[in-house]
Structures are given as structure tokens and as C-alpha cells.
Length: 388
Image 1: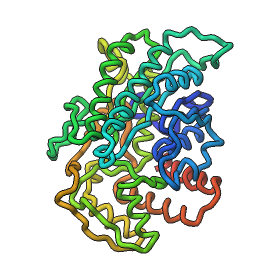
Image 2: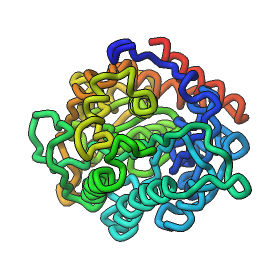
Image 3: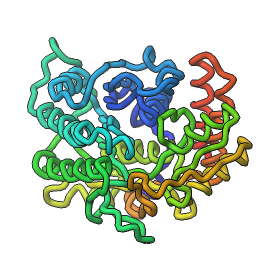
């Protein structure tokens, strides 16, 4: 197999494997858990209770289908105990304070969660490699290697508001507390990777993943444009758009999740990915950072998104721009050449398809009541994505 032939699905990689997922009660975490379950994985989730009502986690009935553990990544001891108990083959760290505007109100919580929460996961993996297996206290390992993908964001870059796409080696930064916390998390990942997971003999392989603005069915967060659209349209109200000219790399949630799954699978079997193996062989590097973003044609304004969404769910929208509003980036593009040439990964759904799939999930969901119905809807979209 070479990198250009890398294909989904990946049941041969994940079936029967233990996968520790932080932030599994969130929007992206819930979609990831559903996909992992479909691949036959044994999922151990670690997160706070769902932050919204409704919540996709509850709609999918995941509490009874994964090992659900309530915990806070700011609690280093709890994180360490959870990972030691799970003894995972794969780790996907998604837990975060994910909202830009909220970060202005809770900067300490944002930095504590996004920076120290990430450090706590990495430190647990570091100490995990030092602990001998004790069959009386923890589960036996199913493999000799742990692969960890730590998720940050495209906003980790020092945004210069330029038209160029950001590459993985561009400078970290951030105007607001959220963006700065994610840039700091990337620096922490880089330092700990080189300090503790850099040798070829190390049993832990670490990578970070940076995704663009993710949309899709089941996101119910406050201050996100698609949930705002759904809430307004459901009530027959006009959609309030506060930043209509801001450009974002919109992508369906399944796009970055497929990237995370491909990246972790490749790290677990690097002999079949020669370009990735060259990265691993670099002194002091166990892996690297990867962008997972849409094609350039999906870099569209908020107004473009709302207009496209209302093609599928008719309604009105109005400009509520506020010149005194808190700062948010206006331009942000990601270059994904590295993921393509290293992993064979590339986006599958364009902007129109992304909006169509997102709108159809929400419209169909309005008539659903049981977890099995939500599972069928969500898995159907996963299948459609894999078959594209």
C-alpha cells in the first residue's frame, strides 16, 4: 500500500481496539464515537456532561454504548487514572473550551482546559509508558504501541488576515484567548513530543491535528452560525448574522474526523506509509502536525453559508453586524498538501454538498424521537461519506 491508495473505512485497524476519547460528549466527539463504534472499536470516553440541550451525545444514546466516564481534563490525576485503566491502543484528545466569544468571558478556564488539559493527557501517556503491566489492576494491552492524535484548531496560527493558506510550519499565535490557548497547546505538544516521545523505540506516537470551521448535524452550541440558523428557522424567525463578510474554511464534521482516523491508522502502521516514515525518522520527532481543511472553493463568507443553508430550509436572514463587537478573524485558510502527500487524505464533500448534508440532518431530526432513529440517520451520513 502507498499513501495515495489509503482508503476508508478502516475496520481492520480499529476493530476490537480500545480507543480513549476525551470530549466524547461534544459535537465532534459524538460523531467520532459513532464512527468508531461502527468500525468495531471499544470506546472509552472521558468528558464533562454535555454542554447543550439537546445534545448529540444524548440523541445518539451513547451513554449506554461506550464506557462513559465523567471527568475534567483540568484534573491531572483523573486523566492519568482514566488512561491507565483504559490501557488504550488509540487516544483522540478532543476535550476543549471551543468557543471564541466565550473565551473572552472565561480566559482562565479556556487556557486551563485547552493548554493544561492537553499537557495532562500527554503526561499521562508519558507515565503510561513507564508503568509495567499489572493484570490485577488494569486491562492487558492489545498492542505494543499507543497512537495519540491531539486535536487543536486552525485558529492556532498567528492570523495575519492574508489570502495565503496557513501551513503546518507557520507561526503559532492568537488574538483572542481561545486562539492563543490553542497556539500554546500546539507548542506544548511539540515540546513534549520532542522531549518524551522522540525515539524510534518509544511505544507512544503523537501527532496534532488542526481543522477548519466544522459544521454538521447535531451541533447545538451557542454562538455558532449553523445552530443559530436552525434555532431561528425552527421558530420561524429571521436569522441574525453578526459577521456576514468573515471568510471561513467550512467543512463537514466527517472531513476532519476522517483525517484523524487516517492519521492515527497511519501512525499505527507506518511501514506502509513511506513519506510518514521519513517524518518519524527525523531526530527528536515522533510525528508532526497536520492540517485537515476543505478545498479552497469552500472558503466562503458567513453570508454565503446562510444563503446556501436557506436554499434547503427556506427562511430569511438579516445583517446584525456590530462594529463594536469582540474581535474575530475575518480571513483564515488552511493548506492541506501535507495530509494529501503523506496520508493520501483529501476532502470529499464540497461546500454545496456539505451544506446540503448538514441541512438534511437537522430537517430529518425534527421528526425523530428515539436514539435508534438518530443512530440510523447519523450512520447513514457516515456511509454516504465513505462511499463518495
